[in-house]
Image (cartoon, helix red, strand yellow):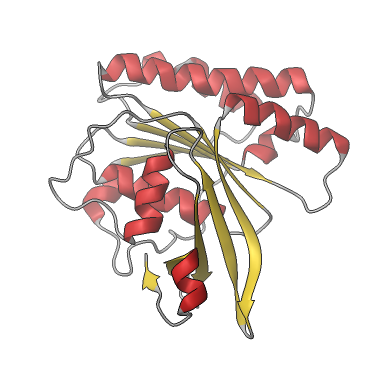
Length: 244
């Protein structure tokens, strides 16, 4: 799923009509960042990207409804793409596990992308490593099941957000290490300062061996819209940004 995020961050737009992506989904991706770092906004941008590829719907799991839909396209959200994003709100770890174990009961087209926002909230209920490993394995099994349902060459991707702490406890570090084994691709969001008055995020994408590492500078406008610039060009020209 690194390529989905790479398209969002590199092109600054979602796939246009008819621009169907037939490539394999790639390894599952872990989206990492501190509180308020924009993980949900980037995850939603990935959902819009996948919804515009002409494939199946997107299954977006989160503990509670989003207070507002993040701006991702520099303008009005495409209602046709929004219709392809199915939101589910499992309020507890138990309900999340129940949902994942009952995916065979889902009717309609198989999802092309499975998203989970706020993994740390579910881990807080059952912080043991064994429980975390079970949840990680079940997420991967669910994406694999959807891939078999979709058919050959149409894998279901998987992206999960996990909040990180600046000074993590040993238990947090062990959980992170565990999930990194299950999710070989990772995308880190780290606060950074490019220059006087230029506060934003440095986004580092590690695609898990399927491509080179890439970095971007991301900032948020007052209306919530993201502006994204490749890291090197941003360093050379701070005024050259593009809305996503």
